[in-house]
Structures are given as C-alpha cells and as structure tokens.
Amino acid sequence: MSIAENLSRIQNQIADACARAHRSPADVALMAVSKVHPVEVVLEAYEAGLRLFGENRVQEWQSKAPAAAHLEGLEVHLIGPLQSNKSAKAAELFQAVDTVDSLKIGQRLNAAAEALGKMIPVHIEVKLSHEESKHGIAPEELPGLLASLSELKHLALAGLMTVPPWSEEPETARPYFQRLRQLRDENVSMYAELTGLSMGMSGDFAVAIAEGSTCIRIGTALFGRRVYSALNQDR
Ligand SMILES: *Cc1c(COP(=O)(O)O)cnc(C)c1O
Image 1 (tube, rainbow, N blue to C red):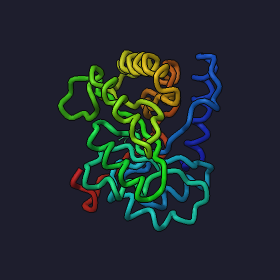
Image 2: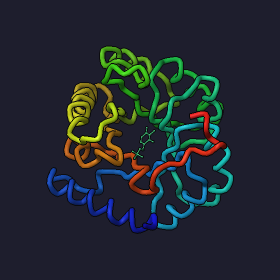
Image 3: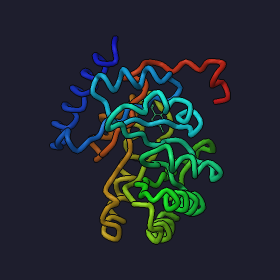
Image 4: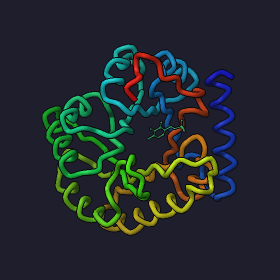
C-alpha cells in the first residue's frame, strides 16, 4: 500500500469516528509520525497532502530537516522526551513541542525561543499510568506546572498530551483519554488556549476521537512498521 492509499483509508476512518461522535473532521488534526523512517517518507507524505509531522528525537530530525526545508507549510512537532541540553536545538528545529513535562524544560525552551524571537506552542505531557518507561507530569502536579509555564512569555500553552500503556485492545486506552480530557476541561477556564488534546495512535485513534482528541499521532498505519536499523539501534 502506498502512503496515499493508507492516508485515504485513515481519512475515511477519521470521518466515520467523527460521524459517530458528532464531531467535525476539521477539528481532528492528523499528525504523521515519521520517526525512524528516512526523510523520503516525509517527502512522499507531503506529496500525498500531509503537512503536520511528529518526530520523537531532536537529532534525528536535525539530520532529516535539510532535505525537507523546501516544503512550504510543513509543520513538525517534537513528540518525544526533550532533554534540557537539547532545548535550544529543539526551539530552532520544531514549530511546536508536544511533550513539555517540567518547569526546567519549559524555562530552557522559553529562553531559547526568546533568543530566536519566536513563540513556541506547547502541549504538556501527562503521565496517567504507572509505567516506569513513560514520561510526563503527574496529574496532581499539572495545575502548578501550568501556573508556572503560563508566566513564560515565549511559550503558548496549547493543550495536553498523553501516551496510554500499550495494548492490542483499543478500549483499554479509553479511560486514559477520558482522564486527559477531564484534566483539560478542569484547566481550560484558567488558560483559554489550553484546548488541545493530543491523544490517539494507529491502534486506538477512533477511541481517542470519541473522547475528544484534537490531534491523533499516526505512524504505523500510514508508513508501515518501523524498522530499527544499525543507524538508529540505540532506541
Ligand atoms: C511513535 C509514536 C506514535 C505513533 O505510533 P503508531 O502506533 O506507530 O501510530 C505516536 N505518538 C508518539 C509519542 C510516538 O512516539
């Protein structure tokens, strides 16, 4: 299957999920997760009409970005954990960071954005499971983090993001999506721009749409399985 064929199948599935949830497909952004794939995949996906991309490592996108620099309207978000020593690079390379989970990262990113004279939209990653491997801030700490981040003039609070525990059964993710939406609803009155809900991946995006997702992050369903080669075996 070509990327264009996969895209059209996914768009139909998004339309169905939106119809069932009485939502407009225009309110659900489709982010193409191109991590691990070569930049040619980004070029082909762009050709197929995709404009929003997610990459999970600063260095990986740094090496791919020059070959995509000519693509008009391309928007690439960082969706992997950010180390504070990479904040300056991240601020330079990405249009948004969807995984801010500490004040320290927020401050570093803000300083880098200020130096570049830009505003960076951010999603706060919330950790809703107890898995060791997951990143994100604990829900109890979210109000405090939002209060501190809202003081930073070069960051724009855009929404919340989460990654539920991996499961083959999409319904397993539903309570995590519901919880993220509840946290968004509790805080959006204080931070009016905090409307985004980045949730849902290849296996569970229909459930995420039913629970209010505004951005689904799709890798495998668009591009096939990721093959971890010698070049990126450190993951
Ligand atoms: C890899 C990744 C995705 C895409 O996952 P698929 O199951 O391949 O669609 C989405 N979100 C994040 C944060 C990822 O790291």
